Amino acid sequence: MTQPNILIIMVDQLNGTLFSDGPADWLHAPNLRKLAERSTRFANAYTASPLCAPGRAAFMSGQLPSQNGVYDNAAEFRSDIPTYAHHLRRAGYYTCLSGKMHFVGPDQLHGFEDRLTTDIYPADFGWTPDYRKPGERIDWWYHNMGSVTGAGVAEISNQMEYDDEVAFNATQKIYDLSRGKDDRPWCVTVSFTHPHDPYVARKKYWDLYENCEHLMPEIGPIPYEDHDTHSKRIFDANDWRKFDITEEMVRRARRAYFANISYLDDKIGEVMEALETSRQDAIVMFVSDHGDMLGARGLWFKMSFYDGSARVPLMICAPDMEPGLINDPVSTIDVCPTLCDLAGVSMDEVMPWTTGQSLVPQGQGVTRDAPVAMEYAAEASYAPMVSLRYGKWKFNMCSLDPDQLFDMDADPHELTNLAEDPEHQGTRMTIRAKAEARWDLDRFDQDVRASQARRWVVYEALRQGGYYPWDFQPLQKASERYMRNHMDLNVLEENQRFPRGE
Image (cartoon, rainbow, N blue to C red; front, side, top):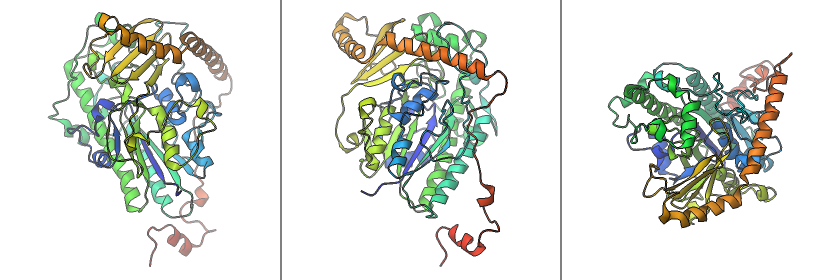
């Protein structure tokens, strides 16, 4: 079997309800639309955990947070857990990352042979939540509503600087691979931080949405006292009482978010153009780590099992998968086994400990009815929360909260909790039994608390005296770049050119 090249394009905090069948028709996203036309599109793809680091570790490993231990944005991703980068590299692939993956801990590669940029977020334990202190806000890193009140236009920002660098390095790497110096198949992951808040966009993209009809959410704000208990915790964690959110602020924040989808589309277009003009074939996957509530119900950002936060876009353009729309629920933990399947790489040695499954059969017409699982055990929670998407049903369970049961076909905005409805007790108890068979919530809670306590001790210790950071430092061998005197200029110019001269 010829091993195909693989290009993975990952974005951050992209609401999957905007990508029910490729980008919504009102989004200015021609490059993503072009990719969607050639792809198997998963309308109901869910993150394994609606937060950056847990969602990404699950995506890379095929394991839920309760398995891999990445419970929150400061939990170490252990080096002994194989990722798709390990599996492919072991099978002879060159593996490379440009951009964000929010690895926490001293291992900042996790199977990637090369990493072209540093990460945008810290690699240490400083963002550790603490279940021992329910209700505590850690002001210096918790989200607050300043991202909404400060939304607007800027020509450069921390995140734009980062994603400009990610796109540049990825494009240069794609061109470099075309030169044929390495005959191995390659897997390049390009991971952007947009459209993650803050909601700030360049004017050229902002202007695209001047007359947009979608600047207010379909479901408006709900009074705090009428929210479910977890949503109240999210409001409190986001320090909502200190902010007066107006409709104009909501419109501006959503407009900037949409504008940043168009900004990303241009960046993705640059990478895809490099692939096409350098005449390289590759499987292309597009995915996000989690979504963004975007003001629906008055909620913003992530941390919730509601679809705005938990549903993500997922598209795969591969010869072995037919273009078209798949409605069966799937998970981002399915990415790792899917990539291995497409590359002809066996995961048999670790499959007993991997809960994801390949999506290739669904791209060949096979239906799937296995439940899709989600977990959340980070800020705004004081005990682990779990969820099953099973057919048309979504069931949420936590030891601190009443059960939630939603009919996603009849109630896509999840406004009616059927968990106490007498007519739906059979469904509730059937799915609850599946959840209880899958999870020991008491053990899960103990594991999270033990992890948090250990990390607080280690973090505070390592901040005393000399400090050696774990943040990834990209290295460049300047003496091997461009032209140097140990090189033959004629050979260099010929080898660095693609296509070659006559």
